[in-house]
Length: 385
Image (cartoon, rainbow, N blue to C red):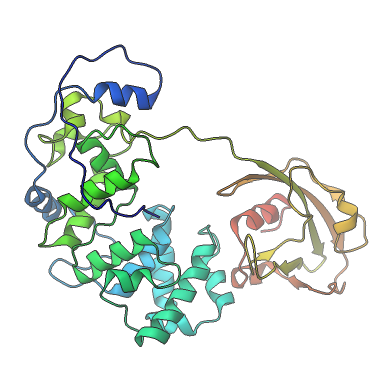
């Protein structure tokens, strides 16, 4: 998730000079403004930690002050928090802990149950990685997470960021996890003009240089909290920041320009047709997706393949019956493409058998199925709750 650390941290640019005409490009504006007056002094870890001791967020996976964090809690929360908000993760985290209180319990669970419990959180490869990592911790380390960043990085599904987060937060090792919040804080402190993602190695190096030998875990969480509550993407509350004085972007009055991001290209578009078959007893025809690929092993409403152009639906209909097109369409955005699904509905008598590879499921059984958000949308679009 985060590029490798640069071997020697680059010194922050703190030059002075004339500011020329601002251009329309965020990167150009940031580069131009980088010549303005710098903040005063260096960011002091002690100042941030003192702020954190007073204002730390209370989160379900976070240990109470003075107590060591549970590595399993840190691992579970960090996997869930990838590209997902704290608010969305909270109920899933508590639900997983209630069902699988230790990494050994999670490792012993069938993957299908883990996918079902994850349904709705998105980015389903994380659930498979979560399960595979839990099994590796049990098989290789006797059910105990290793207290070594390199050994953590060797586990399946754990990248540089997650390894550093577990090492710092769970074991108080001098590691430097850099999430989006920390990226924003550091880029503003030093007015890093290079656009992301190219700036990641420098930001990582600067964060590592800031990290103190004492309380590195609290420091990492303090940086996260600072970015989440004070140094926010829009309208940062600079006057409340413990690093207000040394912050270059605050001194220049251009914090909103950072971090600079490269322009995003438009997502490719794919289309498909979903077949919503509903029996008179309320049961809906569902099937399990293949073991590999997008939404692997998840439950779906049968559909045509998803591609740049819709395929003729007749060849992919799961049943020979009368299908009627529902008005509108289901729109869903995945990481790498945007999907539009037309929905065809068929109403069938109770007792209609399911074709091979399919099954009938009544709405009260949906929660036991690994239904991703896009399929929940299809069901809702077809009037099935």
